[in-house]
Amino acid sequence: MDYKKAGVDIEAGYRSVELMKEHVKKTMRPEVLGGLGGFSGAFSLSKIKEMEEPVLLSGTDGCGTKVKLAMIMDKHDTIGIDAVAMCVNDIACAGGEPLFFLDYIACGKNYPEKIADIVKGVAEGCLQSEAALIGGETAEHPGLMPEDDYDLAGFAVGVCDKKDMITGEDLKEGDVLIGMASSGVHSNGFSLVRKVFEMTRESLETYHEDLGTTLGEALLAPTKIYVKALKSVKNAGVRVKACSHITGGGFYENIPRMLCEGVKAVVKKDSYPIPPIFNKLAKEGNVDEHAMYNTYNMGLGMIIAVDPADVDKAMEAIKAAGEDPYVVGHIATGDKGVELC
Image (tube, rainbow, N blue to C red; front, side, top):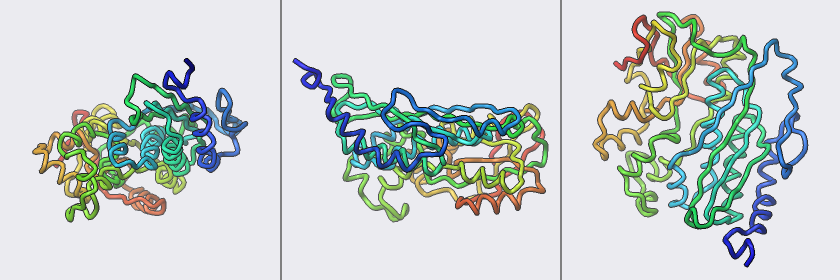
């Protein structure tokens, strides 16, 4: 008896690392010390010395049951973008710059090419957010997970000067809400998605006229990463007063998190285009409107609040970063919460 016969293939692990090195290398930043394969990832904090009062920000998350779609479709090179996005978007909406990311892949059996494909997506997410992929772990769990199954999670660290943190503490009536378009469902609510739609490869590879693509492609579209857009707004001299990453819990849970006491967010539902995948979800699943806005991003992945005088500059900065912004509402006096109209 040896470890391989027990279900853990150490040689496959070595091959996975070799295959992923080319992807990891693309994400390196000058602050990264050492290479892939050490017991820990090292990152120099020399640039933080330039800040008055540096604050470290962190985020950890996974992709939820969206990984099940990647398995069914046997497409694993974008799910890593989702893992990165869920972490770095949280850091960015607090005003931070993501510095580095680490991934964790648990699998029933280590298939090196599949693992390398997953890490390829992680590396792409790191490139989009300008974070370095400085480490990770691939854990083979025979007997705990089916051979073809895996799960993916990650952890990111960022930094900002305390004076630049986005807190929402001085929001006032009349401030304007700008939403940034999502790519679709992103990485939340997939347990409901999998109940509404038939989860077979044939079903997911079926083209739908109303979607303009196959169902699987619409659902597997990777989560948007808004780091560069928020950085562009800051570089344009616009102060973001408050910011919300619209993830699990949709509008009703996430928008109030950006508010201070005494104000509410008023969002106009017809102020931006809702991606067709949400209309299809609601219709085929008989999901009522409140549940949709309480579960999904409904087409807006990030919402910021700015002073009315800064709206035009903020919109142009977001467009310059390649994202689609919409004026979607405003801040009003009232009980802390969100009002959809």
